[in-house]
Length: 270
Image (cartoon, rainbow, N blue to C red):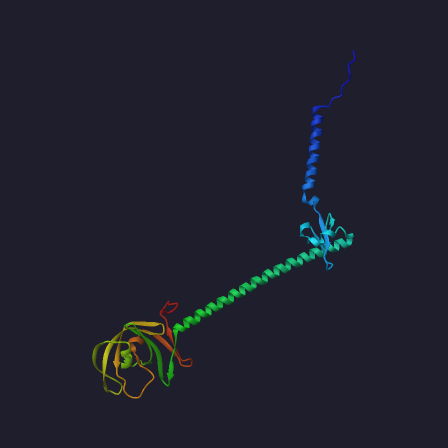
């Protein structure tokens, strides 16, 4: 008995064939999606004759899109040696742009540093000037006389007058006219001996504060006298009850008193 011969594919062969088809299809998909495999460059020329290569068609101005030429790689339209020179020039241009960009960054950084340094110097100078304004007091020199501006406060009244610096006076001395303006009440009355040996009538009073330069003396005692004789351009004496508590030096050339601040004081108080 004869039996017909039937040709059949094995299951293994069929599975390998299907697997191969899947691999081929997968490679095709990758080829379509891979940016490197489907990369294109577009060439156009502007109205000034400048040639541009771009990899994004939408970066091309619309008025130049009718002249677009597409290349698989940049400078594909050039001959081999010319293409090499173009690529080399492009690389050089890129390096120059990067160097210029870096130079601009460094220049801006330097400018910023210079501005900050100048601002720092200006602030330091402003602080120094402010400090000097408090540690230096402008004075008036008349021969061997030194007249110092002094601020008095008493009973809500503020008054600045010039006093004669006098290390021979034991107290601050005010002329009667100044005492009247400050509403100083007499605590005691009596006679005081002055240079030459004569005695004059005085009153002892007290003011809320006396400020000279950066230093303030509270509840300061003052002697009040009636000025007699030729007019003078000062209103009393700055005596030792104030001067003994401070250290100072006199700059005759610049006509200032420089006050020495207490140890550890960065700036005088108001």
